[in-house]
Image (tube, rainbow, N blue to C red):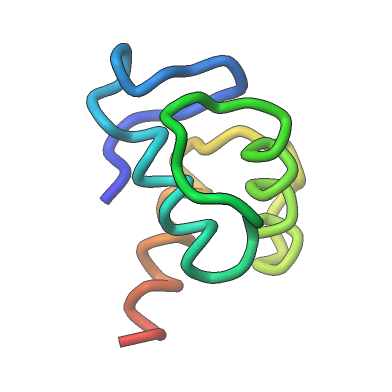
Length: 79
């Protein structure tokens, strides 16, 4: 799970593995074309915004409390 806010420019080294966790989630559910790299760059930003749009959230590209909650909710629906 993602326990920290994750934003553009973040790296795994500064946020545990939160960037890779977000990227893995986005990749697994087809919101990101490539696998985790541990850096929140333009591709991850676009993937987060696409996910946010699909969930009716504001498209900020920032993984904060609302987006983290939607990720958890989305995962519960899938399993």
